[in-house]
Length: 165
Figure (tube, rainbow, N blue to C red):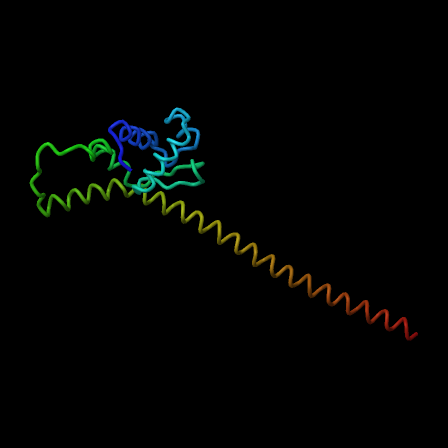
């Protein structure tokens, strides 16, 4: 998909719209694209294929979630800067500079990963609680089945006893 400068600015606008939030709703996205659903869907699809967002929903998703690297991406100029022609060739960075840049990038992404881990831990706890409830329900159903079987056996014995006497 070949995009022009305006479209890159629109993509940056979507990423900037997240602010401190981790997600945008369908309505927020439509507001950015003047309610042009097809255009919004194609631009969100581009962001998703770039690995900057994940979507929840179909053509134009109900929710768009920001990936951890978005802040650093925007700080480095976003789509507009990444698609401009370089004015001057940069010298290759030393290993120490590369490590420092990588450390800064990882530090910027860390809160996003921590939030994701927190969300996953909460989901795991929720699922573990559901499993425990289903296990308790299973035992209750076994006990009920046993009680019904015992009651049926007693009724049959009582009927047979009455029938013979």
